[in-house]
Length: 295
Length: 193
Image 1: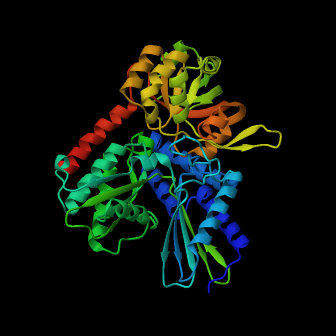
Image 2: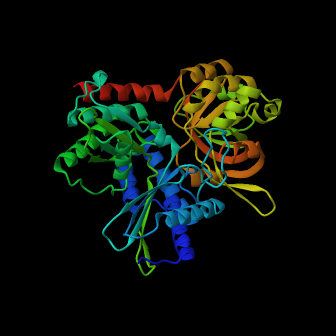
Image 3: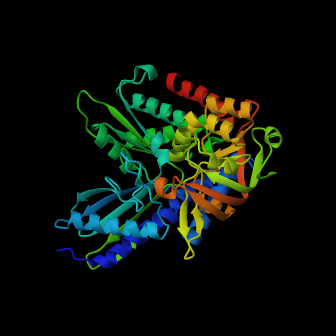
């Protein structure tokens, strides 16, 4: 039986939210530093990257949100057998309300029918929490804050796409991704990180794309064919010249991460989840004794 | 670096060209999606003194209320502007707004409006929320907080040295169109060979 103290876990979840909102992960900061080095001295792009890095430090030092759009709070929670999803959901919501009080999160849940903001970031479908049971003996909470600007440029294609000459193969996948990033320009707060879901149905495909965004920027895809395509896309997309914020520059994407699901014979979806440069994600591991660690 | 002090004249705004880097000081007002919809349905007179020869900032801030009831901005970067494309040209003309500040740029209708009524589009850096909140030295007032909620209310704020870049000017220039044309050409080559 997995036991934990509810009050303590609520505070630990609040700390996870604080980290996600205010402390950009090291792999992302390193990628932005490298992008800055790759722009000429005195260019607008280099200047923008410099300002981003200062903002990242300021947010971390003062424990304030990196971006005011603290986004959809997306949780992937991995639990051992027998842990109550209902209780964990309640604790996540409690921590969320407290995070709004502390100005780590913006109240971001608007009733789609009345237009009324709930005021505490809780609403139908918010936050988004996806549970999976696993064989491990600990709980892992993965959290990503994904803002509206980049979510709005995220998209889904179905192959074949006649207009793009994109067929039902990896070459077709490549073409629709180029099209999507070109269409996005700077609107999703470039440079972006792309999570790509190939296959599945419309729902599972998008979830697969978002799940890819929990990978580290520096990792390599276990599938050699996808690893090669990720690298090729990153290089080619940076040829577009969109640059940071769409001001023009050598870095349009920081990374491309792809995963594939089985599909129906009739369907071939490609889902593109565009994440902004403020790529806010952290995870927390909770052991049976109540000990936690953050990553 | 060009210093702009609000309120600002149409003549000064018409001198600006795409690529100019500016820092802004003075009183401006936030307005985003729900606020623009509200304006278009009501055209309220109370906005006249707030908007005339001033700027609209596309921003939904994270705020903190002090014990005495006053507010401060905690995080306040720009939001994507293109969603206000159906509204902005007429709002700027009606209230004599001299600039909108946001991110991502706007479309042909707004660009034509800037030329007609004398305005510019100023691009702030998306996600620069902690830094830009520091430039908000005072929250003078907030309007329609109850109806629109914190992110979408009209926040009347005083800024000091708020940095932005002119990406659309009153002479028909748009940096976004230039970048997009280059990017389109590369994309076409990558897709069709």
